[in-house]
Structure formats: C-alpha cells, structure tokens
Image (cartoon, rainbow, N blue to C red; front, side):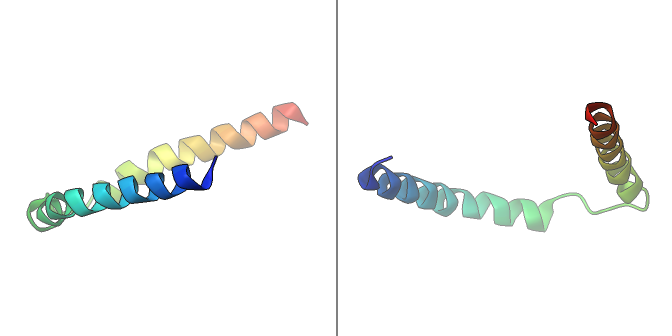
Length: 61
C-alpha cells in the first residue's frame, strides 16, 4: 500500500475511535454486571477451541 493510503486508514481509524468512545463509555457504566457463572460460560468455548486445535495438530503430524 502506498504511504498516502496508510495515512488515510490511520485517520479513519482514529475517527472511529473518537466517534465510538462515548458509546463504549456508556456501555461500560450501564452494562450488565458479571455473575458467578460467567467465567464458566467463557472458559468452556475457549477450552473447546484449544482442544480442537490440539486435535488438528495431532492429525497433521
């Protein structure tokens, strides 16, 4: 990519961050609070993905 396109892309990304900052701040303040079982709900899919990657690595070897 040319240098001009990189500069334009950086400007566009900065504009997105600037425009989305108030919404993200609002979501952080007024969003749902974590419950006791939330970590289990997160760890189960992550463990499934890690297991799948492990199985795929074993198959390729």
